[in-house]
Image (cartoon, rainbow, N blue to C red; front, side, top):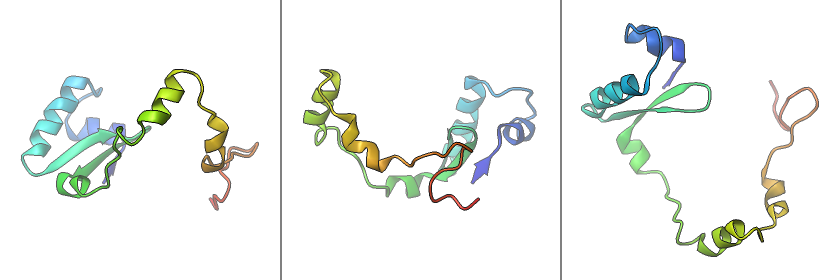
Length: 97
């Protein structure tokens, strides 16, 4: 479930969302198996059991690649095809909105 920052603040009777408030909300949600997290411009609540079932990324498998990044030897052009292009009007390629 998505929650706009203003909605989250209103639900908790606050004017601003502090780190302390987020910790309190998470403590409350954890009791019922949910977690709150920031997702760029909004907040989201997810069921912990659902998140636990998500695939994991292991840094062990990326060790060689990460070493190349830290040493400045990684060619980021290899990943360019994975990044959606953005047109002059701000729309993402393939975005129908």
